[in-house]
Length: 116
Length: 109
Image (tube, rainbow over all chains, first blue to last red; front, side, top):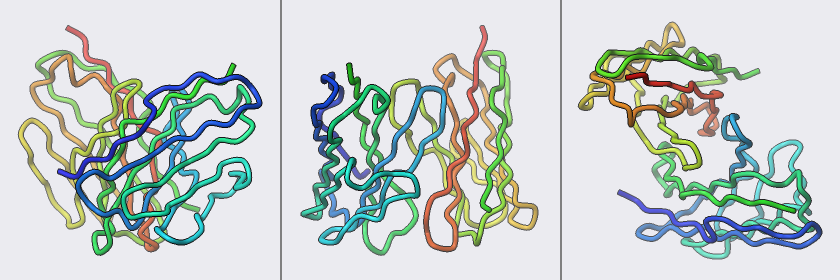
């Protein structure tokens, strides 16, 4: 099946710093990638939808200037959490789907972010 | 608005059968997914239903009734490793995934 990787798998940073998370589709081209955030004991919350070569579409309540998304190629999308604060500590998960297959999303393993 | 309901938590015994229900009200319907998510890990795909009826895959089966806006995931011969959260997600008319809050399944020996 399709494989999606994320890097890093976990990161601890100081408040005020920026953190970049990479999401890669390893064996397929992902025209669309999704970024989710999940707080403990809660379901996935879609943050933004990213199409290769265009600006990301952010969900209501998600600050686009704080969560910078870049989808520069068909196999890579990045999420940068700028000026991170403790309340940004969460589990960030990306997923990817190919063109023509609007159904299944393939999930990355997630990135655990802890902001001190 | 769009809404997906599933029980918050269920408990079952090892070796038994459990059914996790999901009801949905969405703008359009283009399929329903069930995912399994262990604590601290990303979701993994279990099943996809777009037509009415039962889809069986090993110990897991998924049922869909579009007219009732209803699905269930049936887990047989429960094993301790089945302890996880089970997420129901519906593809709406814009082909966006609408997620339920998940059902935490606790398996007891």
